[in-house]
Image 1 (cartoon, helix red, strand yellow):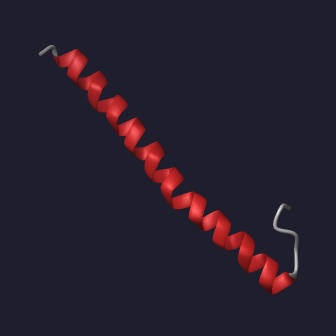
Image 2: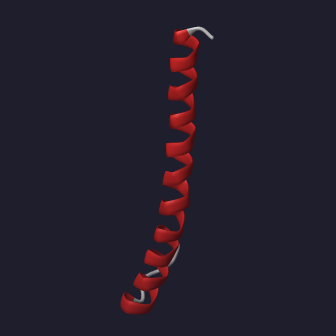
Length: 47
């Protein structure tokens, strides 16, 4: 296999994995944070 193609495949794979991990971690965190602020401070969930 061509070394340049292999490097591009690795970089593309890492970009996909990192973006997926970011979404998997940040989405539940934001939802929990919104409910915490609603319970603690009485702010709107949609704010």
